[in-house]
Image 1 (cartoon, rainbow, N blue to C red):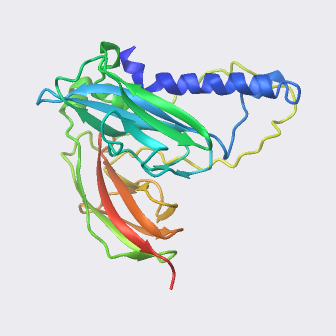
Image 2 (image 1 turned 180 degrees about the vertical axis):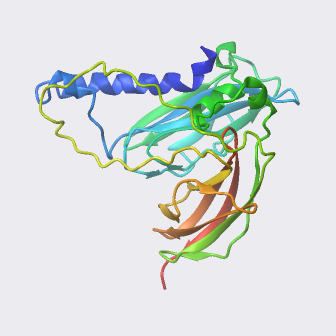
Length: 301
């Protein structure tokens, strides 16, 4: 049960979608195709509690991610009534810009060592008119270790437990940049170092399975363009994303950028003016480390 703490809500969400689709569209779409309906926009965001881990000082970290049920739509939801934590400060470092689909182990909230194991820390997100919550506790069933995180965010490399727990996360720092202008690319540079573990490795081969459901009716009437998801790296790399901001950023190159001579650089251009937090994750194939940079984007002159 512990090994799958980060996936329970995701699975439940898909079950809910399947049931809702079957009920609403039963007369329009063959039953065998109803579970295949995908939405490019208009759906909600489900905050996900991944589990908790012990910190050497005796406190605890609660790990969170989210599921944006849209396959295309990216949502800006500023910290506030529609993106909040309770009890305590509403701002716990959570994202305020939500990319499509599953995004696991994105941030952690530290709670003190005297936090009651049954006390809830609740993350509430309202998107497209629907409110969802992740309720985090320190109950034993939610305790996780490094293996759970790597299973959700790693590159699928084959490593021993000894190597997994010997690996140290990479370090990363992002150089400050001057203010940007909408549609005018700027360069973002990350300085990265690592212990060389696990090193360059081949991905684990995918197990081939026979399909369990064969749709014999006409193609699904819903045609959703699905953007390619970045593949986890097989060597030390950096990926960039909007953490908070009013609009999208376009990174070139997109996806994971391999570190060369301790550096990884991209060109970034922004679609809307405003204040942005850009997050860079350094990923060694097993573990990753975030670093943030805040910048202001001005309207075009």
